[in-house]
Image 1: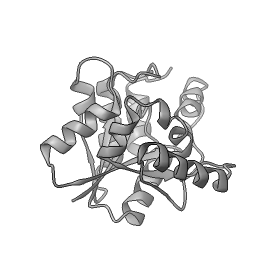
Image 2: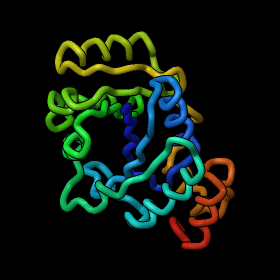
Image 3: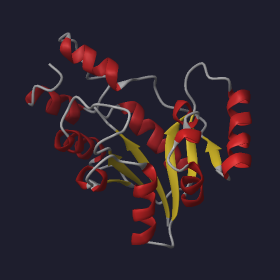
Image 4: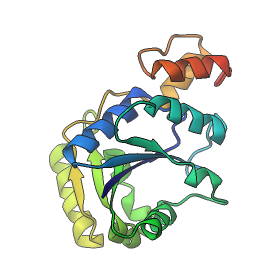
Amino acid sequence: MRLGIMGGTFDPIHTGHLAIARTAFVEARLDEVLFLPDGDPPHKEPGAKGAQRLNMVRLAVEGQRGFTVSDMELVRHGTTYTVDTLTQLMQEEPDRELFYIIGADTLRLFPTWKPAWKVASLCSMLVAPRPGIDLDELRWFQRKLFADFGLVSQLLSQGGPDISSTRIRELVRAGEPIDALVPAAVARYIKENALYT
């Protein structure tokens, strides 16, 4: 069982997230991609409540083959760290291989993860490139992370459209349409629940 893990604040989830997950699903021959909305992310203060972000993710992945959602990080008390989630997933099903899906900008922060060596022992990384990134430099950094921490990482062929949740929230506040940036069901949910206004 090859399980891809797509963590994030998803505030809100958008078509860029889904495109990266689909690329990872195909290129890493995954059996499933599990979306995990952050509970209490150490670096961010979400604009929507955890239950609302979870609902938006569920709406976004509904009917998409191989995509599932879990609230395990939302129900965990205290600050959410990736290592805790990976450990829990391995305890639940020790035979599966874990592949954590991240952006290239997040990969640069990997040495600061707590503890990085432990994360590297539990999963491989599937890395989505970002617009304007130096791919040669990124590949050098991947080799360095393998040398320093034993982290195995695979660079995906594409990173999806250049969309940010921050920009979507700004557009909602300005009364501008977001239909091209999020699934239709998510756009409706944001409007019906007056999120980000």
